[in-house]
Length: 228
Image (cartoon, rainbow, N blue to C red; front, side):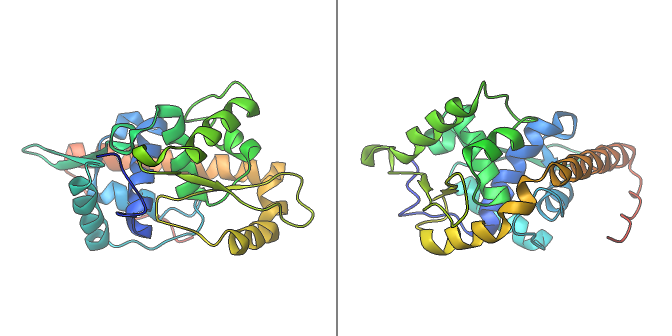
């Protein structure tokens, strides 16, 4: 059966876990599949997340188990460790490009097509904004037989030049409330400085994940992360 968020919506933590697995598979492939510890670190990172969350290991494990029942995550066990990978495109029933856009919407909240193109640079390079919009339109027009729409276009916020998009994997959303929230945050998210800060923080997160992987392979305790 195709994934239908109207009948089996994801919880907020399931969405964060699934999108984080998708993100790390593309941005830090050397550290993927992820251990539970690395996954929790990715879920709770401060950069490229809206909202910022504090997911515990127990909550992440519960989400992974639930996602596995929905055929959206896969457990890979070995003598040394248990790791997890996503089954996003096949489990949801969408192409890779659409899975990238859905994951970004789950991680960063509502975004315009232009913002999605910028934020997807390390995941997948879309040729132009029109190609992003084409995949968004497909997700919006997903047939009832396939489980219904997976995204919605929000009303244009006051003063905004473009409309934003939100995902529906966690069920129906209040489009007017989301549009208002998006309007309040438009300026900061669109600034070049913020984009550079996000990129630097993402690089730091990647380095931390690599150190985590090396420590796990050597059987040593990873260094404590500095206070933020």
